[in-house]
Image 1 (cartoon, rainbow, N blue to C red):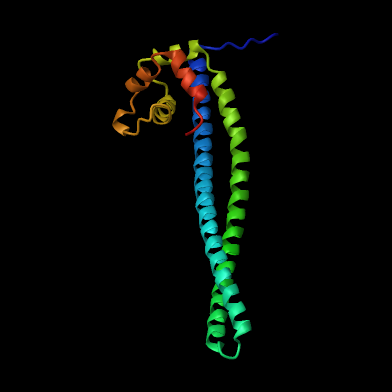
Image 2: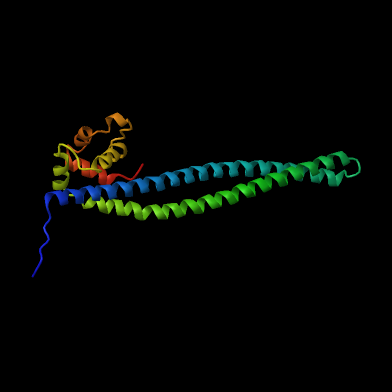
Length: 198
C-alpha cells in the first residue's frame, strides 16, 4: 500500500525554526572567522609598519657604520677609538637587522594564516548567502505575524537584531522588536542578503 507524507503547519514552522537556527549558527561561525581574520590583518598591518620603521633605522645605522669604517680605514692608527665605536655600531646594526628579519618572518606567518582563514571564511559566506535565498516572503510574513515565536526562533531573531540592526542592549532584544525589524519583509530579506559580517 502506498504511503503518503503530509506537512503540517507545526512541522513546517519547526522546519523554518530549524533552518533559522542553522542560519544563525552559520552566521555566528562566519562572524568568528571574520573577527579572527580582522585581528590577523590588523596584526599584519602593524607588523608591516614596524618592519618598515626597523628597515629605515637599519639603513641609517648601516650608513653610519659605513662612514665610520671608511674613516677608520684611513686613520686606523690615530682613530682606534673611532674604530671601536664603529664596531659597536655595527653590532647594533646586526641586532637591528636580526630584529627586522624576525619581524619579517612573523609577518609572513601571519599573512599565511590570514589567507588561510580568508579561504575558510569564503565557503561559509557563500553558504550563508545561499541559505538566505531559500527564505521566501511568505515564510517571513508568517513568522512576523506570530504572537509568540517557536522555541529557538527568538534566539535567531535576537541574533538578527544584533547583527542587522546593531541592537546590543539585551533588554531591547525582544520578539516585539524582532517583529518591527521584520515589518517590511522585502527590506529585511534584502538586509540579510547584503549582510557580510562587518
